[in-house]
Each structure stands twice: as C-alpha cells, then as structure tokens.
Image (cartoon, rainbow, N blue to C red; front, top):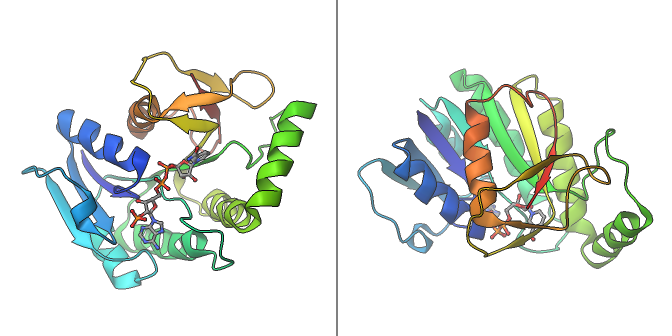
Length: 209
Ligand SMILES: NC(=O)c1ccc[n+]([C@@H]2O[C@H](COP(=O)([O-])OP(=O)(O)OC[C@H]3O[C@@H](n4cnc5c(N)ncnc54)[C@H](OP(=O)(O)O)[C@@H]3O)[C@@H](O)[C@H]2O)c1
C-alpha cells in the first residue's frame, strides 16, 4: 500500500516507518527535520515541511491509500499546533479522496466506553495539570478526526516505552481492558495492522502491553 506518515521523526514514528518499509509498503513522510530519519530506502520519500503548511501537507497526502498520524505536541505552548495541522491533513485527504486515517492519542483523551477508575482519574488530572495545552491540543485533534466523516480509527495509548516488541497487545477501553504501559514497537505494529482492518472503523480503542 501507499502510506503517508505524519510524525515519522518521532519516537514511535521511526518504528512505524521501519516496519512499514519492512512490510513492503511505499511510505511518504512529511518531516520538519528530515535528517532525524536515519532510514534511506527506495520505497521512502521524505518531504520537508511543517503540518501547518497546507501545500506541503497536500503534497504528502496525494496518491496515498491511507494516512497514519503519530503526531504529538512537542511543547506545552498554547499554540494548538497539532490540531491546526490536523485541519490541513483532513482537508488534504478530502481533496485527494483518501479515506482511511489512523490517528494516535493519549488514553487520557477519553471515550464514552471508558470506565476510568480513581487511579486513572488521578493520573489523567495530573497530566492535565502539568501539560494542559498538550492535552487540549490532542483532545481537539480527536474531536476533528471524529467529525471528519472519513474512515478513521483513533488508537489511544498509555505511557509509551522503548522496550522491544512483544507481539502481545491488549485492546479495549480504559478501566476495563488495558494496562499502564505500551512499547512503541508494538504500537507501530498495531497501527499498521489497523490500516487494513475494519474492526475499529469510527472507533477509538485503547491499547497496551
Ligand atoms: N510519549 C508518551 O508516553 C505518550 C503517551 C500517550 C500518548 N502519546 C501519543 O502517542 C503518539 C506518539 O508519541 P511519541 O512519544 O512517539 O511522539 P514524539 O516522539 O513526541 O513525536 C511527535 C512527532 O510529531 C511531529 N510534529 C509535531 N509538531 C509538528 C509540526 N508542526 N509539523 C510536523 N511534525 C510535527 C514531531 O516532529 P519533530 O521530530 O520535528 O519534532 C514528531 O515527529 C503521539 O500521538 C502522542 O500524543 C504519547
């Protein structure tokens, strides 16, 4: 498949690009700093740019079969960078007739099917206190994706680690099915599998190890 990946230079994004290429997918990545991507591959095209640049985003999305975004705010400034970029991504998908979108977010962005315990509420509140704009930006991202009318899946994750892939991923909803940690290598594998799965179309499951 032809995949466009946003957030490719991030800690999860790098696993995602490597795994996508290993599976034989053609990958286009939009990156502010292409040098951060150490991979060079015939099936990888990197476009230098910011997600707030609608022309560059459109260029990156053109011709894709699906879009995977592991974008996340890189500061707690009240700039709502990722959600502003999301407007460009969604517009570009509509412009080019690309329907499938997989978007990651923190499990603190709640879903109606969650049943958060007191512990979840405490840690969710703590993150909100320490990084309010990060949380707000990602809540806006998920809101925009949910309202997009596209074939979306939001994959919500707990604390991410650099641990090796285990191949054992729990899925479901907060307070019912998942644990507190997830390896980024497992997350990348799960996101890639969602591209061809319809199980969570229009849904926002949470996953963990
Ligand atoms: N870290 C955690 O424990 C945790 C917990 C819960 C949820 N999550 C979510 O999981 C996902 C992956 O997390 P991560 O820790 O792997 O992320 P990360 O390392 O912080 O990577 C974020 C990516 O977004 C890109 N980005 C941000 N603003 C951009 C802009 N204006 N234009 C272009 N690219 C931009 C960054 O590019 P640069 O390389 O140029 O900065 C980077 O590639 C994110 O959706 C995050 O919200 C993470």
